[in-house]
Image (cartoon, rainbow, N blue to C red):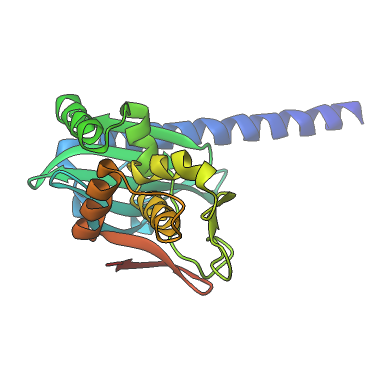
Length: 250
């Protein structure tokens, strides 16, 4: 009886370790492809032969492409990798952000949701220049971690479902009421974010305070709000219970 129990424990341990090792190998393989970010190509990725990844079963979806700032464009992909472990199919799901400047890829950010793992590969000189432009224009002191977080943290913009603020009376976002001028600093942080959805929440909140007469817009507020409206990028919006409708706002 003890031998059988030990055998079961050993098999469970071996299976778990084996599965984890295969998962690590799969991630290592795909990261090797992502590291060559300058030559990233979806069609090439679909046809590439990997050792552990089942190419014919992988699913790649282009979610959106949009302008951010300073002639930089962001393209988002959902990429589901399938692989065999213990004769069954397993999955790793990546969200991939490709950053382009003048049709040249300058960076790739990938987020793997099972282990909450973030990897990024940049032309650091170009990315640092973009961060400096952002800090100069938005009057902030952001760094590379703020830049990466802006593209890996996904938000939904809208006022019509459980994932978004409620606009029935006084709107709020992340617990910050739009009619409370004590939240102004938080709203300005949103306005200066690298994340476009958060920028629009900050814009809404500051304009709400301004229209209610509780806050006067300063020169930086006006400059940034005008810029966001003029840029008119695609937003990850909410419509009822349907999330993921991408549309221009202004």
